[in-house]
Image (cartoon, rainbow, N blue to C red; front, side, top):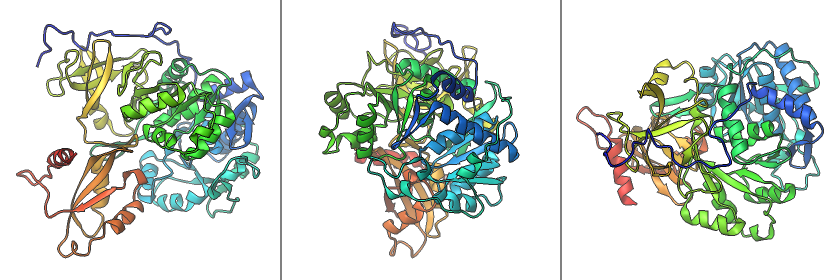
Length: 559
């Protein structure tokens, strides 16, 4: 269907742009690893990492990253090899990632919530030969490593970088002493060996990050990012949010997630800002850290903001240093947006992007944001709305699939050329990435999302692909058929619901709570169905395919 003649096409719309920024960036043609070396040279003994009472300077940070790079190289790592990281936000996460890149290797970030079956896929698919994990997670990693290329595991202890006299209230798992883990090299042994790395060989066009995104039809896929693709958004986000040297930035977004890779790691390092570590979300600790270190910037999902504002002790904290809070991934409820603005005097800056786009393709200008809005098209990028069937650009205000292109886009899915080809479409003689999200653009160039073309659930900003969850649920001996859908949730935005057809005789004794416990052992917590319902039958097509859309529509109608 062609766009109406009385409205401009979304392909040609320029829209609003803040006057303080040029539309095009001049991005450093260096590697992400070089950013740490530059920061150490520029800022030396200035704080780089605040680790719950212990501070590492830029010089110390770079020296430990170099030592880890040297250890990896003497252990046999080669240029382009993959290093998997499996732990909570920590000083070791930062040092290991920069050490791996300094050794010309590729970082594979993995959620510490993942279980053995999920870990096995990441190890097998990426071909990682080395891994760094928290000592309590080492048994799961070693168990998952069977039949993979994994050769060496370095086990880290959080308390190595957390002082015993920390002024913060911390859980026991952060204070646990170092223990020997069979089959693993202790973190301190690797660092204290003092091996010096060879001169770097990697270029900005070399692969350096391989974050995984779940797929709509099955197992997670690795998104290939180079320093060049990631550096574009790192430089752009530092400029957009006004992050400069010395600014304390809250390292709360999970470092394994694309939002954390940017806001908790690479933007602060690029800018010479200071990373205030939050190992795992805990609202009172977050408030303490913001007040203590005078944090100016934080990337927090709407669910985190909701939880923070619900803290009855929040009024006693001085959070006046904050000048920017925002995130992408899920919509901020309008009432919470207002409460945050009333409490702290700053708007919540919503953005939009995906793992394939190094986190950002759209962002709201801080001086002119719109609520529940994806924002305007990013630096050096293009975006428009098309008819998902005919691929014809839609007019301003008319819904369609959001597509985009720009220098931050990934180089393809790891070892999946067919999936890579299917993700792009040719439009006006150029290649555009298909987001799978339905939305529209207004007359000022602000994009809004209204629905999804892809079958995906957004739970607290984490993407959950029903096909992946269903595949895991079918492993249960009582499950005959499964359909996973998203249902509205006041706190998480959406939550996961599973409708199950059970085998003969199993329904009478079915225990939803026990089933959820079984699922938690096999998948990350955010993927586990919060609602589980046994049903007599599921709607099917004439060829026997479960009609998930019909199930989803029925759940939506329930409200």
